[in-house]
Length: 65
Image (cartoon, rainbow, N blue to C red; front, side, top):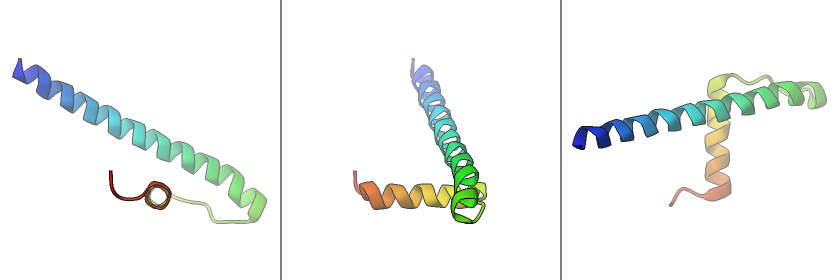
């Protein structure tokens, strides 16, 4: 019974990481499709987009729970 709960937490962790990765790729795709064409802005890499994603989360919702 206890191992089932551990596998459940591991599964949710993997699912959460997959969701965050998907959200970063969607943000990167939208940025790289629109911003360079419309405003002559830079093309972002995955890690730059992840930083932008984290920064926007901090600025818009704060650090606390």
